[in-house]
Amino acid sequence: MKKICIILAVILIFNTCAFAAVYDDIESHWAKADIEKLSQSGIIEGYEGKFCPDNFITRGEAAVILNRIFCLNQRGENNFFDLDDTWYTDAILCLNRLNIMQGDGEGRIYADANISKQEALCLIAKAFYIDGETEYIYTDASYDNWATEYVSAVAKRFALPNSFFDTDLRDPITRAETVYIINHLISTDYFGSGRFSINCDKSVVINGENVVLSDMTVGENIIIGENAKNAELSNVDAGGKIVVLGTKSDCGLKLDFVTSSGVRYIGDENTNSSFINKNIDLPLSFDDVANYSTVKNGYGQGNAVDSDNRPLTAVSLQEQYKNLGALFIGEKSDKIYLTFDEGYENGYTSKILDVLKEKNCTAVFFVTMDYAKKNPDLIRRMIDEGHVVGNHSVNHYSMPTLSDADCANEIINLHKYMRENFDYEMYLFRPPMGEYSERSLAIAQKLGYKTMLWSFAYRDWLADNQPDKAYAKNLIAKKIHGGGIFLLHAVSKTNTEILGDVIDDFRYHGYTVKAFELGDK
Image (cartoon, rainbow, N blue to C red; front, side):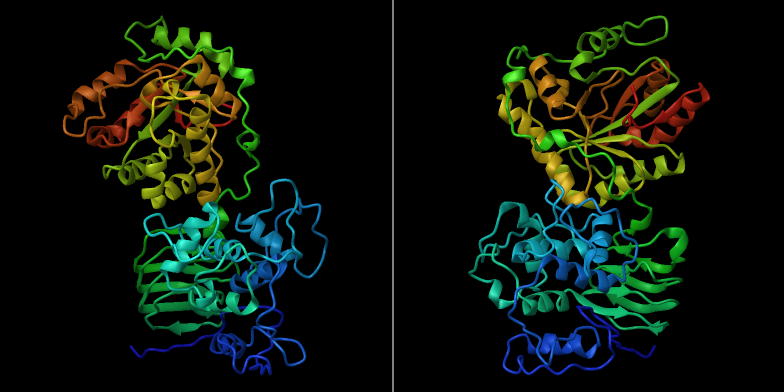
C-alpha cells in the first residue's frame, strides 16, 4: 500500500489559521525547526511577527496548548476560586475533568503563574497518557521526587531539549522548550477524513471523522480525541495504548487486527470522582491514638459458625473492633464481598478479570506498591472495569511491629502513588498477614480507611502446592454465608480456574456477589 505521510496538525496555541507563520526572532534559535514545523501546520502564531521563544509560559497557556492538541470540549465544574471566565478557562476545566491538570487541593489553580519545567513534563506526559517510568531514572538534572517518574518517562523517549541537562527543573519552562517536547512526543495529528498509512515512532492523535489508519505501526499511544467519530484501525500494531477521550458509544471506533497494550475509553471512566480522602493529606499526629494497645494480633476466621453459618470469631471481633473501622465480616445480608490479595503477579490476574467481566461481577483487589508499579496496565484495567483497588501497604510489613509514623506511611505512600498515577482514591486497607493491633486499626481509621480482614480464607497462596479444584469448590460452598468477606489469592491457579463456578454457586444460593464499596456495611 502506498505510504502517505500527512502532518495535518500538531498543536500549539493562539490561532488555527492555515498558513505558515514567519517570525523574525527565531532565525538563529536552537528550536527554529520545531517552531517552524508547528507553525506550518497553521496552529501556532506569534504577535507582530515575533514568537518570543524564550519567554516563560503560564499554566493557562499550557492548558490551551494541550486542549487544542486533543480538541477537548467537555469542561468540568469550576471549583477554583482563583479562576475567572477568560480565554484559558475552558481549556483548564476540560483538562481538570480528565484529571490531567489539578489545582493545589485548596481551591487554587494559579492559571497566570509560570509553569515549571518539572510540572510541564508531568502535565504533558499525563495528557499523552504516558505511564510513569519506574525502572529508568533521569539523573542529569535536579527536580523534586514527586516528578521523578514522569520526568524519567519523557527523558527515556529522548524528548528533552538540551536546556534540560545540568539544570534545575523547578525553574519555569519556555515557549520554545514546550514546543520541542511536544514535537518529540507526537508524530501526527489527523484532522481530516481519509485513509492513512505510515509507520510512526511516536504517538499519533486522531481528531477528524472517518479517519482510517491501516497497515502501519505506531511506536507509542494512539489517542482518539473527543470530536473524532467512526475512526477505524486496520492491521495496526501500537507499541502503547489506544486511548479514546470520548465514550465507547459515541466514538464508533472500529478495530480490525490491532495489537496494543489495551484500549481505554476515558469518557466512560469515572473522572473527577466525588470521593476524595482528605484525611490522607492532614499533618501527622498520633496523640489521639496513643492510648490504644500495640499488642500484635494474628487472625484466622476459625471453623466454628453460628446458626447462619457465619464464623463466630469474625462475628465476635467485628463487634469488638467496629468502632475502629475494622471489617472482619459484613452485616448479615444477601451480599457476599469478593476480595483478592495481590502481593505479586503470577500470570492469573488478567484471566480473573476476564471471568469477572464475563460474570458482570466486581471485586476488591488489594495491591502492594511493588505490584502497582510493576503492573500498571492491570491496575488500570481493575479501575476501568469497575473494581475497587485496596491498599495492601508499601512493603508488606507486619503493621503492629512498626512505629506509628512508619505504620501510617505504609498506607499514605501507596495511597499517594495511586492518586498521582491513576487518579484513584483508596479507602480499604488489608493488613499484611492479617496482623493488626488496636493502634494499627486506629491509625488506618485516622487516615480515612476501613481495615478489611475476612470471614473466609483458605490455604491457596502457595503457587507450587495448589489445592485440588474439586476440594476448593466444595470447601467454599460449605462456607457460604451472608455478609461474607471472601479472601482469594490471585496467585492461585486453582482460584482462577474455579472462579466462574464459585460466583455461579454464590448466586444460585441467592447472594449478590460484589466488591465492598463506599456505603456498604
